[in-house]
Amino acid sequence: MENYFEFINSVKICAGQNALENIPFELDFLGCKKPLILSDMGVSKAGVLDIVLKILQNSNVNCNTIFKDIPADSDISVINKIASLYKAQNCDGLIACGGGSVIDTAKGVKMVLSQNSDDILALSGNEVIKKGKHIPFIVLPTTCGTGSECTSVAVIKNHETSVKMEFISSELLPDVAFVDVRLTQTLPPKLIASSAMDALCHCIEAYSGIQKNYISDAYAQTAIRLIVKNLPVVLTKPNDTARTELALASTLAGIAFSNSMVGIVHAIGHACGGDVNIPHGNAMAILLPECMKYNLENSRNEYGELLLYLAGPDIYASTPKEKRAETAIQFVEEFEKQLHNVCGLPLLLSDYNVTEEDLPKIAKKAINDGAIIVNKKPADEEEIIKILQECL
Ligand SMILES: [Fe+2]
Image (cartoon, rainbow, N blue to C red; front, side, top):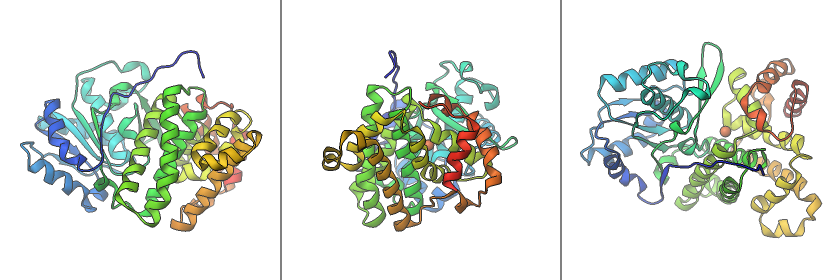
């Protein structure tokens, strides 16, 4: 634990039964009468957006301004375009209804608007962002993994350079996040599994990184417990409680890593997303066990402690202290195999046609990713290539 830490989570969380019915109240509280609603075609086709629109139509909120063409990887030019639309339509707030890309796009738009800018690129680099104009902003996450609804981070792709840019500022935090079973119930099982593995990674990396602190530890522990308990249920015999708890776990994991940061799994995963186009959650699932093995000697205590939340009190108590870290890694490997058997979660880089020749360029990008800095064990290109070879 560092001698000094900061922790922030200013997002109001509305979670559970009928949570969505509170959207008009929250908009009213924030002084928003004409939000710009951001979503994507997938969410729209799944009928999730209609549920939200119906609730808004029954209130006095003007919900006619909708932008549904957000790409799978949030993009700089799309953000600038949406910010212009917001101004042209005289909107007074943002609603993001979607997964990580929609939410991160909305965060980018919020930042452009609050900073009185018209170009997100001009705002890259931490030190530029100051407390700006308040833009009412509520988030309805439709996946259960990114936790983006409660993080100070936005990952935005520059398609011209193929680089995923990371923006970090408390200015990116929404005002309210909703966790409601209706937002995630149409998610296909494979996507549920990969996004929940992203959330599990957030917990494990936040708990074992150099910026860990007592408050985010508590969030990470609870989130791990909820993921392990509910993910298999949601994939095999789903019920509303399990779905809600899994979605909540993702939110809690987001709060944890937003304050303690992630590490080598995300550094390599971002590089895989930028270069060989492996979806983020899948990259996390593929890389997590091998990265834990790489980190083992530097994170032995933390991994050992996490066995309690991964495997439960009986296994934790019956495992000798010196074996707990290895047992935690084995648990993660077994858990992933179980997910692979249930829903076909990809567990190898070769499932995405990645070959030995791709590895040096992925490693080069990974060592330049910000997440590598807070990993407890330093890593160079050669070491990252070795990790990647184990995942082929
Ligand atoms: Fe992630």
